[in-house]
Image (tube, rainbow, N blue to C red; front, top):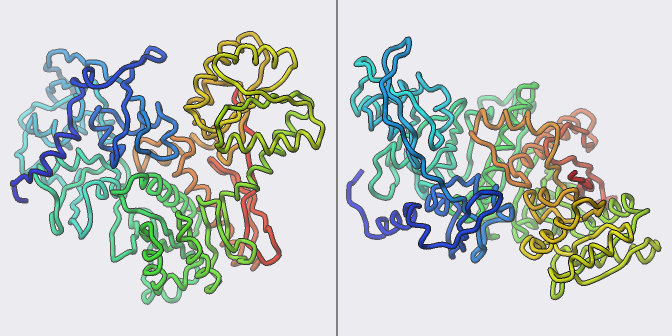
Length: 574
């Protein structure tokens, strides 16, 4: 690889890797629950990775403190960035183990196993031998044992070519450092340091990719088809002509352009699909998995639908964007192939295409089901609809629809406009009427100051709140006890078991709500069981499974139409 550094790349590195110790003079700070935060406004074109590196925090932490990121990173929003406290390092000391002497090293921000191995001129394998947990990643402030006996000292070339800890990857056309990092589930900084990269990568470069604990996610690309050889059993159609009919064939069609903002959630969804296929394989059901990058335009879809193998799959999952859905559902109907629409609520021809399976119900259906759940729960309690002036979001629309039902059913209710100034008096009125307050906005920034007032007032009272899952789990948890409706259950009893399996293959699990990898897992598990039953009985039935995040009850909305999930949770956080 050439050592020359372009001016553009050099400027990029300066922006992304700006050290955090100078941030105090650049950004305002706040303190919440004894944790200091910078307030940072997102610039146009900026991604989560660059922000995480700028402040030396993980993307998981950004999601934890900014639940609105579950809806995607948007230009102009203000993020809370946790302020890193200084880690003081004790002097290194030589100690003894049964395997010989070692030094101690305290991990600093941005350090990797590779950089530490080079620092002490030892192999990564020898560090892992003394620190088993290091294979799963390093934590700032963690103490590592570093071998110092002569038998562990190796040359730089030994470290660079240690095949027990590295995968070799040849860069293909249009691949970027970001796409490769997601492909293998590693950090970009790890790739940079593991390869001494001093210039942009180009086609034909061979990179060393550090292996994580368990099976590394190795994805081999051939045109637009992506096959995960570590997790999925892939058959050649000619070689396995006698057995191919016993295998489920599934196509995933999602926008995997990894340099595009928001693409991370689709990669997470795909990882959940892989875990579901692996679970089915252990139960005796094998799958052929075809994965396509759909891009974002209709033209991208046109080129994919010409693929010969798509005419023979049992199931298509995707696409994500509404402007691409019509062409795929038309294709599915023509070839009598079931197609799952996992994200969009707006699917045309649902009423006359029996091959469509829609997870996210249309807005009106979700609203109707949610209203019904709330009216059943609060049929004997006064409901106070607290509106916000000049607000027209989904929470406001829901309150108006609920109001119509309250009037028809003569359910006790009242209405008001709520502000920070009158929140106390409204709470007093609600307590006197034994009412439950519905805050009629789904926008977190709008309700936060009101919730702070209400939460202070609620101490010692039985005042109940009704909110929206779009507030994010962090804000909802701060406001409990609270009720809200959602397609996603944040406290499933099966989540811990799933998390253990996920982290075995992919590292630390994402705690975002909703969780896209869990959605991919639940949908794929349900579809595999549906396809198995279809082959046996020739009837389309959906099993009841122990899902991780989303129970699914698919209902045929028209005799000749498709299927829609009508299961909505009424969640009570206590």
